[in-house]
Amino acid sequence: MPSPSRLYWLTLGAAAALGLFCFFGALDLSGLDRTQAGLQAEYIGLWPSAAAAPGLARQFEETRRFMKRAWIDFVLLAGFGCGLVGAFTLLAVGERRQRFDLESREAENARLRDLVFDSVAEGIIITDAAGGRVVFNPSAERILGGPPQRGGTGVKGLYCADGRTPVPIDQMPLARAARGETVEAQDFCVKGKDERRVYVRMTARPLRDAQGRLSGGVTVFRDETERFEADQKIRRLSRDLGDKSSALSAATAEIEDFAQSVSHGLRAPLRAVDGFSRLLEAHLPPAKGEDRRLLSVIQVNTRRMGAVLDDLLAYVHLGRKDLEPSRVELEPLARAAFARFLAQSPKRKASLSVHELPAAWGDEAMIEQVLANLLDNALKFSAVRQESVVEVGAGDSDGQSVYYVRDNGVGFNPRYAHRLFGMFQRLHGPDEFEGTGVGLAIVARIVQRHGGRVWAESQEGRGACFYFTLPKARVS
Amino acid sequence: MSGQSSEIVLAEDDAEDAELELLALRGAGLSERTVWLKDGAEVLEFVRGTDRYAARRGSPHPKVVFLDLKMPKVSGLEVLASLKSDIATRCIPVVVLTSSLAERDIAESYRRGANSYVVKPVQFERLTEAVGAAARYWTTYNLSRVKGD
Image (cartoon, rainbow over all chains, first blue to last red; front, side, top):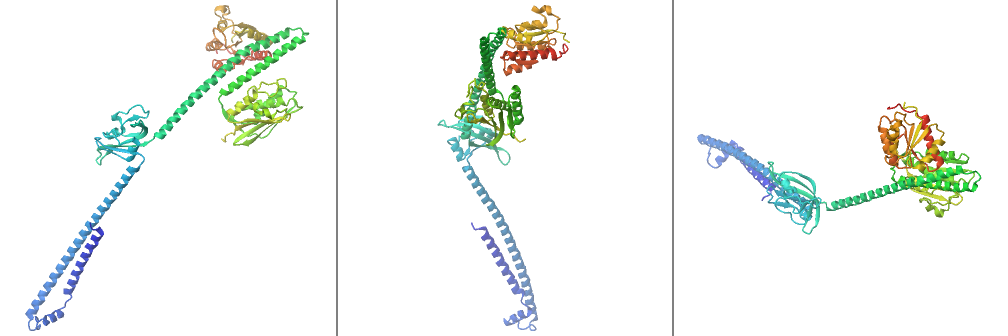
């Protein structure tokens, strides 16, 4: 097939040559004047002299004029014809060229479409309205583990996402699409011959021809097995976690109930022991000194047991109480707690210095409890000094605020620092300092529930410093 | 007014606790007579003047009722609900006096209309202090509401 551009130039050249030929031919004849024509005729013996044969000369002149007009007519006609032919040829060539361009573009597009169809990761299956013809891409075959089925359903062994309920043939996405329905991103499970399970997310759409008539359906799907299995694993784990956490809260509730009952059960008899020993004491004659001492031993121990029960209950209760976090200013809490303790023993000499304390984010009542327990501790263990000097301050660490409570008390042996915050752990005997060994355990529990840490530093006889961290108050 | 009653009711099933609490009330120097009732049903009969206390019908209401929660027959919470839902007895101040520190007991008592909730301290001095203070408040400082208000 000749290239359109060559044909175009050939036609143009031929038309130009013909045109030139006609032009020069016409010029040749029209350019002869009468003298030249007379000389010529004389020369060839046709025209001896104009005077000798005036009739012949006139006849010759007429013939020559007629020939000239006829020639001009012919040339004009031929030129017009050539132009017409050239124009038609150009039009034809142009149209042909356009069609050719369109065809080659379409061929290129189709080639690209095929390329995409063959190389996308999504499986694609196309069927006609009757379901007899099925076209699929390599990804479809790869995902399904074999070529798709004929018959309009596309996929054999299609189950719902639970992997157990088979999808009825007329409900399969491709079948629904071929009926004109649209299926939006539904999850399915495909079971292969080797019991291999593939999870796919399928979308299906009806196909319509140019007139809008239903001509088939297409389904597109991707292999979601990995994501699906990961999801299932997450669901399984969170269910396990939920089970465990509800078991844990049930256990905690049980412990609290147990602590409540124990506390209630023990407090009533204790109250009787204390109350009736007081009554007995009131009935004793003043002389019975030793009897009074024995009674006071009973009373002191009853009181201690009551305090242990109260603290134990408070400790257990802490575990279940929900945090009610807000912005908490620690300085007023520390000052109020300190003043409360001093009011209980007005003869004590004690001073409190509070440095700048950043606001914390936490449960105010609980943080107040932390400060109260630490200040109580500081005052208790510095009671041997002439004046208790207590200092409260703060620093910064890893985005949290570090608070400290320092005293000039008896301190403790750093070797036992790890035992300080345990339940019922005491580093001093009950005869030296009163206490149940629960106060610091409560401090540790509250701070831990706020996501913070507690620790303490000391040298025996040189005071102690207790540290705790709390989240910083949010900027509102 | 609910009348110039001169009675304080102590509802307590534990005899030893009752003895200590009666001592505490007596020690508080109150002029009112204290009546000890041993179960919830008796409390309701006393207040309403029925059955065993039919003779009390029409007498003024007690000035305050100290109510233990764990009692036989009719529990403290049931007595509380019964007193507070009856328009005739709603105005009687009820102080829950119990060993229970359980959050749900505290919440439930207030929900049913308790006027105070006092946990019995283990130490006798503290018990005397707590019961005495509560009794003084409700008999001396607090003005009783108009009956049926």
